[in-house]
Length: 79
Image (cartoon, rainbow, N blue to C red; front, side, top):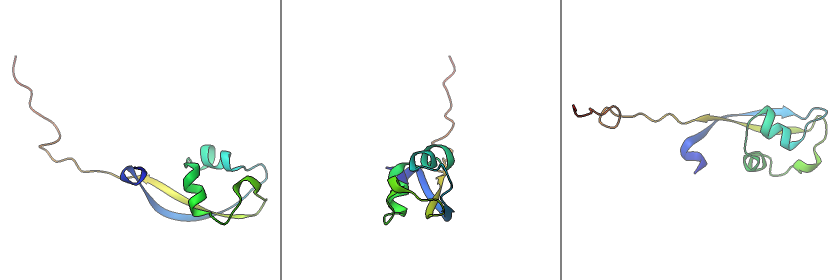
């Protein structure tokens, strides 16, 4: 599950610029899965973006998990 590994840290507003497409925004500019961009912009037709159109962009970050000592380094038996 996506939210097991990542979380949304904040939402930012972005205005579409000339040459932007949903593909380039997801893959090159913000490194987002398309479904997540669609989720936060449900009322926008992403295939018909217009210059200066506002979009909501989620900032995604990894969820850091703490590993206890018993789960971390394990002693190896002497040979």
